[in-house]
Image 1 (spheres, rainbow, N blue to C red):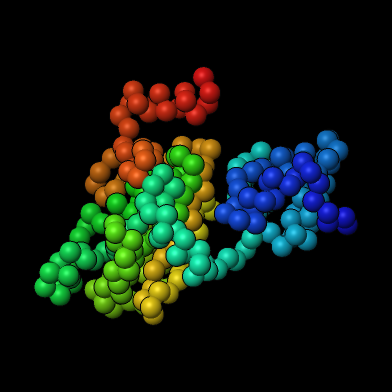
Image 2 (cartoon, rainbow, N blue to C red):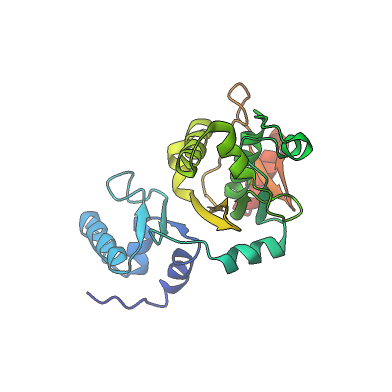
Length: 252
């Protein structure tokens, strides 16, 4: 098999090897110049090609259709110290957000050393993920405060729950799958990567833009909301603003 990347495929592959990119099997087949008329053969050729390039397609070809949206990316990626430092130096903006913790109030801990769980904190993380998917994607660092300083927030979460990092990450995944309108379909657009700064854990969460609109409940009892990025904020849109957003994204 010829593993050279064609000029048509190059832009897609460049994104696949960095943050990842939304695509379909049909789009890849078209970019590869595969003949029309035999979808099964096209699927097999696409899968063989992306495996030869060391990439993954998520969900894989056994789910969805030829035209279903999928995420193409490298299977594993490690956050580098330089990459994390660069995100922190850039500061919060349309594509970068910092959160001190997922569960524990860092304000209370800094004030008196207490470990206090705040039910609203997970919703603040989830709304950022939602806004990134409904905008242009982004990078979320959990364990970094608004000033760009390491705040040991995940350590306090672990102390609060007597968890290790793996259980903390599983809890975040459970929140995403449980509170997004279509959580199982949302997960391929989110990658959670552990990193350590000064021996303290942080989470680097990379979020891809998603063609389908994403809705999330900040709390179990709240209705679904639609968020977009507005500068360094994640704003909830009312119905008229939501329709205006759809028109702007579709170019109408």
